[in-house]
Image (cartoon, rainbow, N blue to C red; front, side, top):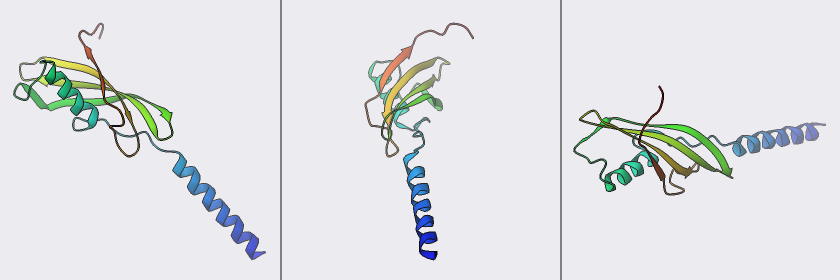
Length: 120
């Protein structure tokens, strides 16, 4: 009887551990110092829209808008990245990249510049 009870407990613990390991959280790649924001700045700098001297990095934001699981431990994420220039101009872009629980740089960032906002 004790052997059966011990076996049931062991199976229950294994099921619990496997279930918790299989359910991974979306990777947290948002923030001004993370992969999407850093690569976006480099792309915008190469395009001549930003540079180190005119950008107010203290106001830079990168917010994850959506994250979709596209494979085992692989997520496609969209971030809204905003850079503030010292003259008050704001440069906004959508950064799309793939991330895993290990790293945010599973794929190069696709960047879409927001030229104009309509509405509030």
